[in-house]
Length: 169
Image (cartoon, rainbow, N blue to C red; front, side):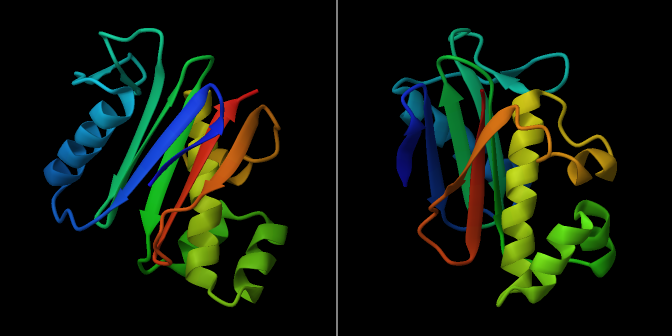
């Protein structure tokens, strides 16, 4: 499934089954090449974020899990994407990542696991967009408070998969 949240940013998500990390990475790179419209080689900057040496005009973000891969590109600024599929979450993790208000909303949701994963993808997409990535759970706790990124929940075509994209304002 592909779409554009803004004219300068595009994303694609593909659901499937990729049991190994290498299979997930390969599927994400293949999806990125389709989105860019040409075969691309993925490099990484000094912070570890993906980059396209042959396309320095594009900001790129990749994400993958066992049941989905996601990519985003932007022509006009930083972009971040995250995708997650249903899995067990420890209460401790949920409590470390959520503000008190978020924690109450997650616990009150009809499907707390997917509500938490939706929140997680939004936060991780913002941190990727900022170029910081996850540096401890403190960064996750405050990720959505700054307002420096526009965050969009993405339709993955599966109720068991959630994704979000963040684009710098």
